[in-house]
Amino acid sequence: MKRGAILLLYALSAVPAGAGDSTLDQWLERDLVPYVRQQLSTLPRFRNESFRFVIMQDDRPESEGTQLAMHIRDRIRDAASEVAGIRVAWQGDQPGVGLAAGTAALDCAANDANYFVGIELEEVRPGQANIRVRALDVEERTWVAGFGRSWHGEVEGPQRQALTRIVSDPTFRGERNAPWKESETDLMAAGLAYELGCKLFGQTAGEYVVTAGDGNAGAIVELVGNNLAGFHALRIGGDANAVIEGKAHRIDEDLYQYWVTITPTDPDDEMISLSADAYVRIPDPYRAATLVPEATLDLARSDAAFLTDFGLVRLYDARACAADRPYYAGAADGRSRARDCFALRTGSSDDAVVFFLNHQLNYGLVRLADGDCESQANARVVRADEALEQALPVDTLRSGSWSDATDWVVSPAADTYYVLAASDTKAARALSRHVAKLPRRCAASVRPGLEGEALRRWLDELAVLATHWSPAIDWRSIKVKDVY
Image 1: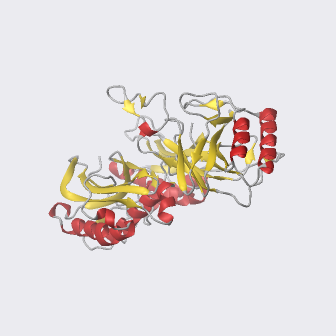
Image 2: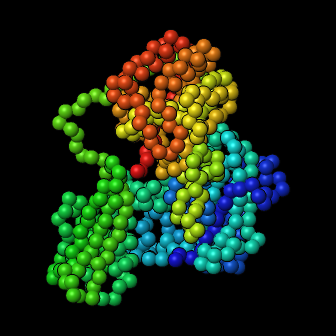
Image 3: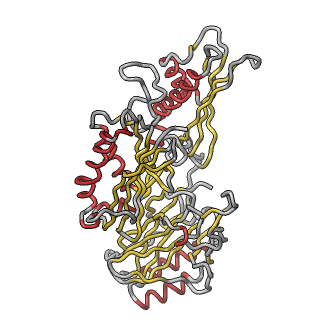
C-alpha cells in the first residue's frame, strides 16, 4: 500500500474563530495556502517525505469531485510545489510520466506518496460550503495531531456554479470515472508503458524480448512498446520470447477498457504474463448507411424565460434522498449506507409551480413522484431568486456526469431530465392536468413510461399549451451520462 495522506476535508466542525467572517478566496490566500506550505516544509515528521494532492470523500481519494474542490486542490498543490523542500509526487495530469530527472529511466516511486493532500467539500445548503483540513498518515492510519484548518460560509459569484458541477479529476486519468480521450492515446500509451515498465523492472526471471501483436489496436501497442524500449524495460525484435498485445473491451457506448499484455511464448518458462489497463473513450468511427434525423419537438421558449438554471447535484447525506431502502448490502454486517445520492436543482426569477420529468433510456417518459407515489401530479413551488431541489431515489444514478440538453426528443440516446414550470395559476393547473397523464416513477427502479406515438401526441399537446400560456410556461432539460 502506498504510504501516507494529508487530507483537506471540508466540514463544519472544528472551525477556527473567524473562519466564517472571510470569503473563501480570502481564507485560501491568507490562511490555508500559507498554513499548508509552512506545515509541510517545517514540521519534522514531514521532512524528506512526499505528498500527493487529491479530492477526498469518506476518507478515500475520489476520481471525481466538484469543480470548486478541484480548483482549491490545484491551488494548494501549485503553491506547495513552489516551496523548496516540499516533494510533490508525480500525478497523471503533470508532464514527465514518472521519468527520473534528466534521464529516460523510469522512476517507479515517482507517484508514491508518504502523505496525500486531499480535499473534501460539503455543500450543506444552496451556496454554503463547509471545509475542514487535517492530515492522515496512511501507512500508520492515524491522523496527524495538531494539523488542521476549517472554514464555512457562503461562496460567491462563479464559485456557486462550481460548487455543484461534478468533474473528473485528471490526476486519475485512465480510471473509469476519468477515462482518456481518443485524442490522448499517446498519453495513455505512455501511462500504460510506465505501469508495465515498473512491473518489468520488478521481475527477475530474465529479459523480455517481444514482437508487436497485429490486432486492431496495433498503433497503441506500438506506442507502448516503443516507450518500453526507450525505458530499456524490454527489447523489441530478435529472438522473441514474449508477445505484446492490446485489446479494447466495450464497457458502455463509447467507453472502453483497454488492456496491454506481455505474454511469454514458452508456457513452461519462469517468466510470467504482465498487464496494464486504462479506460478510454473511443467514439464509433462509422455511421449507419442511412441517417434518419432524430424526431424532436419544436417547443419554443418564451423571451421572458424565468427558470434561471437546471442541473444535477450530489447530496452528501443519502438520508436526504427518496428511498424505499436507505441501505445496500456490502458491509461486514451486510448493511452499508448508500452513497450514490443525487438531486435535480432549479432556480427561478419568479414564483413558479414546477414539475420534474424523466425520459428513461429505452423506457419512456415519466413524471417524478415522491416515495408514496401519489396519483396526482407532483407539483412543487420554487420561490423567486431561490433554488429548489428534487431528490432522486437512492441508487438511481451511478455517475454525476451531465450536460445541458436543448430539445424534447422522442427517443433520446441518454437518460434525460426535464423541469416544467408555470408562473401563472391557470397555466399551472393546465400543465398539472397534462403532466398527470404521464406514468409515475417514485423509486430507483425504472418504470414503463410514455413512448412512441403516444409520447409524440403528448408532446404535441404540450407544445400547444406552451404556446397558449406563453410567457407563463418555461422549461429546461439535461442529459445524464450513466453506466448501467
